[in-house]
Length: 239
Length: 82
Image (cartoon, rainbow over all chains, first blue to last red; front, side, top):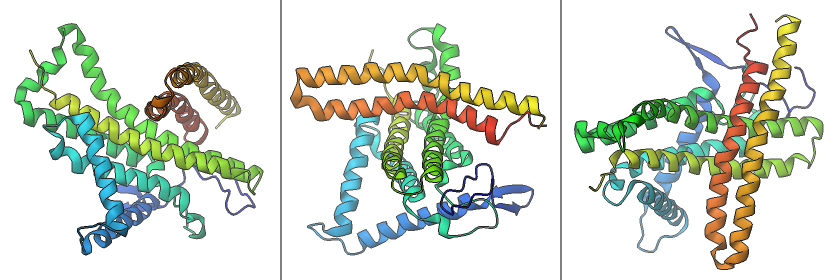
């Protein structure tokens, strides 16, 4: 669809393909996620270079973020196990949050690619499925390492009738996690693109703010659910 | 893609979002109504109610988004295009 407006192009399903052995990978997703990772690393390195007793500036911001992530994971995972999983939850939250906002706030359209377009890495289903499968692996590992084979008791509690449902749940968890994030971020981008296509000035702004808001909430939801699944796996029943 | 397939895909994409919006719409209305009632009864709990409400609204919204994903697959990555 050739449009005349430079900021309102809709390109869904077009990618910048890189050939890696037998694999075709989506180059634009890699480029934008490297930018996100680089931004996060730079922020953390700058914020922790000169640690002070009274935090100021970047260090203050980082400590606030740390507190926030600690509260989130402690609330879901529980006092005993949350320290092991806080880095994982925090990484997920920060990567998704910065990806979502980076996709919305950075004017990627100014950089021209031969094919496809730069945007939020989380608007590509492969990224979100990878993140969701990581969460699946994480909660299995958490349960197995904490409880050993007793972890599988969880599948037949409170009654063995629940067994098929719990097994299906293991598949629907990553499915819903990945689709929720992917769909929300892509929907935000599409709504803004369609509005900007119809009315290029001012009118898309409220939709953009709504998009920023929902993408922040989606990052929070992804992290909260990951922590909740891990917490469910490490939770000890008190008989 | 032949014309019947594309016509069916476009109709199905519309139906996927439209029908998928009904349930979550009702659910979000109920949730928001409950939250307003709660705030009216206990104005000092507004912050906590708002946080919980936003989180649960996002969960309900995800259901419509599933319909949207199906619609987008039909429009941009149609497996029946042949």
